Image (cartoon, rainbow, N blue to C red; front, side, top):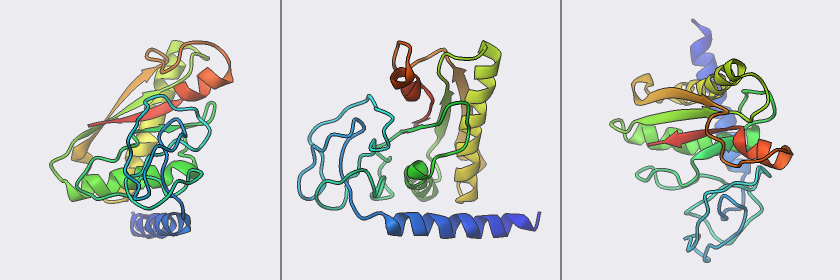
Length: 185
């Protein structure tokens, strides 16, 4: 297991590069910007659009196009609690790494906090396949958090597969919102 320190170093370096590269903040999960100049939000939404601009932030200034996500104080649970996946994939999209990093910072700063990672899929595929895919998605988030120094004792994984869709319907717009992992504190 000599690769573990190397993997942690690489993950930390990548995280710093991603966060440093982000220059704008603001917006809610549906991509609308309700924030004031200091970034505080006055409105909220629970439905995402799957377009990559689904991040809320409580620090920074102005409104942006979807970068700088999840940057906030470590004492508060990050505002964005859902990340989305590509069809039939369990790898975390680079655009969501900063969201997962915000959750990692929160969990490291609050060692008594517990999170359940809910893995979901769209309705395509068999029930068994979707249960396994939901578990793999939540497991990939769990591994990412673990690499960032979050204790395994703080996390648990549950797969709902296709059983609890965020959006009912068929078509890519509904499917893309159902392929997700939800952070449940």
